[in-house]
Length: 391
Length: 107
Image 1 (spheres, rainbow over the protein chains, first blue to last red):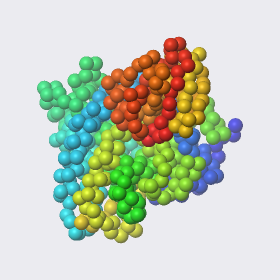
Image 2 (cartoon, each protein chain N blue to C red):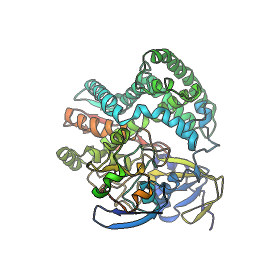
Image 3 (cartoon, one colour):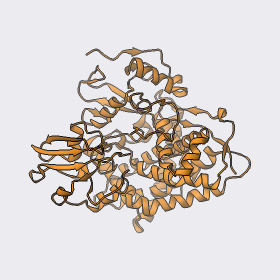
Image 4 (tube, one colour):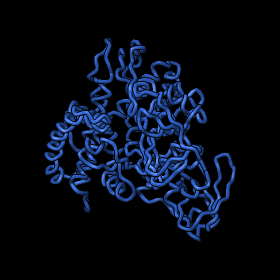
C-alpha cells in the first residue's frame, strides 16, 4: 500500500478557526493524510476512526511525544493501555455508577442548576459562558470529585491551565509555569480533603480512591483527579453552549423539542454537530493499514471524531444542527477502553436536567446577535460566548 | 464453535458461529452486526450492546447481575425481562443455538 499523502497547505489557524471546512475537503479527497501543521496522520472517516479506537492492541494511547506528561506532572491513565489503564480507570468508576448518578449526582446537579439559573439577570444581555455554563460545570465537578472547597474560578483556571499545558506543543515556558502554579493549589486542596474523606467516606472520586481496599498509589490518585479536572469542565460547558446555540438559531426545532420533550435528541445532535473533544491520538504498535494507506509502526495518528461525526456516508447535511434528524451513533464520547467515563453523567446533566429546565425557566430566551458568537478550537471546540436575553 | 442467531428489529435473521468463551457482543462485532454498538468494548460502561435474549433461551442465559441491571437503565430502548448487555453473556456449549433479538437503537 502507498503511504498516506502529505499535506503542507493546511495551517494550524485553519484548524482552530474553521476545521470543518478542512475536514470536509479531506474526507472527499484524502481521508487519511499526513498533515504537516500537526505532525500527525489525520484519520477523517467514521469507519476508520471507530476501528482505530476499538483496536487498542494495535493502536496504543501512549503517544510519547506530547507535552501532556509535563503538564500533568504524571503519566496519566489517558495515555496508558491494557490492565494498567483499566486499574486506574476502575478505581474511579464506582463514583460514576448508574446508581450514584441517579441517587446522588443527578439530584445534586439539579439543585445547583436551579441555584445558578436563579442568579441570572432577566431582561438584559447576559453571556451564558461565564455566568452559567462554565461555573456550573466547575461546581458539579468539584462536588463529584470530592474537592468542594475549590471555587468555580479555581476549578476553571486549573482546568484551562492543564489543557493549555497539555496542548503546549510549542513547549513554551508560560503555559508550563501557569500549570505548575495550578498544581501547587490543586495538591493543597486534594491533600486538605484526604483526612476528612478518610474519616467520613462518601461516593466522591477522591473518597472512593483513597478508601479503596487495594488503592492506587497516591500519585495515581492525584493524577486521576487532575485528569477529571482537565477533562470534565470544558466538555459539558461547551456542549451546553453548542446545544443552546443550535436550538436558539433553529426556533422551529426548539418548538418541536419543547412539544415532544425530546431533549435527549437535542443533546446528542449538539455533541455530534460540534464535538467538544474533536481529536484523539493513537500510536501504531505494528505496521498497519488505514483507508488503503500504510501506517508504519510507531506513527501517531489523529482520529478526528469531529470529522467522523460529519461523515456524509452517515449524515445528510452534517454541517447543520438538526435536533429532529434521525439519530445515528456519533463518536463524541469515543469508543473502546477509553470511552468517556462521563458519558452518562453528561447525558443526564444536560439532556435530562438542564435543557428542559432552562427553557421552562426562560421560555422566551433569545440569542442576541448570533453573528457575534465566536467558535474556536482544534483539540477542544465550542462557542467562546453566548449572549442571550432571558425572559 | 458455538452457533447463535441474531434477529434484527426488522426481523432479519443472521446465524453466525463464534468460539466458546467469546461474549455475544464480541460475536456480533466480529460479524458486523451493527445493531450492537458496544462503544466501551465490553467494560459494562456504556449500555450500547443491549439485546433481548429469546424467551426460549432466557433460562439458560440467566439474568443480569445488579451492576448490569443498573447500567441497563441507561439503554436507549425499552427494557424487558430478557434484557441483557450482550458483553456480559459468555458463549458456552450450553448456549449453542442461542437466539438474541436486537433493539432498533443503542444511542
